[in-house]
Length: 511
Image (cartoon, rainbow, N blue to C red):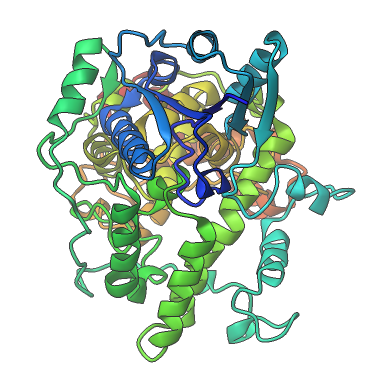
């Protein structure tokens, strides 16, 4: 039977069972399509990264004797739309069965279901064999529960996969979570090793993208592309993290510095989200390295890393499939403002935002606290429409695929789901930013000042947000203390804060 098998750009799983045997009647199809580059304005490094990784994966398949049809962006037969390309191939090669791996984005899942409904040949969907849970496991785990606390799910996953467990009930180190140990500010020491770079020449891929007229954001050094785009690259980044960065990862995973892009972070998210690396092999490799070097590496360094992958990553995917498609439009706080133009230019006097956005534009990367407590915090405090925030995050980061982006952005960052993912909004004044970063000392604004021309804008925005959204939080126990402090504020002082916040919201270009 002549089969056509589709491989999407984030399905680069070298260990998938599809590839265990060669079948001369199987055609593997991969394509760079405008459908995927244009549904949101993407960072140029993101487009290049996926195209390069896809091409390397196609080469890997061919080297192992598989028959691959690959449409690059400017291929003469490329219809730039998935269904049209599939129909064309089915007809040209007299395909009798179409097979695909389940997409991780809802829009593609729906598109492929609809395509299968329109064709007369046999169709079959396969698991990607990547994630550690199914689409419905999280929903089953929390069935009958009113809240979906990630910590309980994480503990269950630790037990299920026997990760860092002494017995079937007792975690290593005597506790499940070492998050309290992972909140140090980096002050120049210890020294941060240079990231594992590759310095690849991607000028031909960039030329292809430019010739097609694809609109992108951000910048790229076309002679020194720095992201892993093959399995060998990805394994190299994993090994480098273990040997050079893990020793201090947990301590400084929340720290921020204007001169340090990656600090001690692994830079593995793109390799994992494109499936070049399997989450289990990443976790097991890092744990094994920790066990071999326990005299140098504290358990708090490794637990925070495991929690992000075994807990948070699987949890967010579960929320996505539990709540889509309604999740895409949820806006509980009724925020409707526009995202400021400086999110595309980094031209703002607020030092923390300037550096976090500039870094994102230059490197297609920012770590979770920069995303949550700088760019996300400002967007929420200025009551930006979550659609605008989603679009920016989905486009600008190389690791952003909707299943992981939208739940982190609309849920964790913007509280648009009303507390499904986060039990309280992650907002702060300038004091938290000053505590966890080195941005404030060289900023035009003063983190401790609440009003006046040189007062940190985050301070007035914070109190204005609590004031304007107080009805939304009146029954939120985790907000009781802040609501109580709000109620105790002198009315004149509060009005001064509100007035300044409104000026910032209306004229962000001035700040």
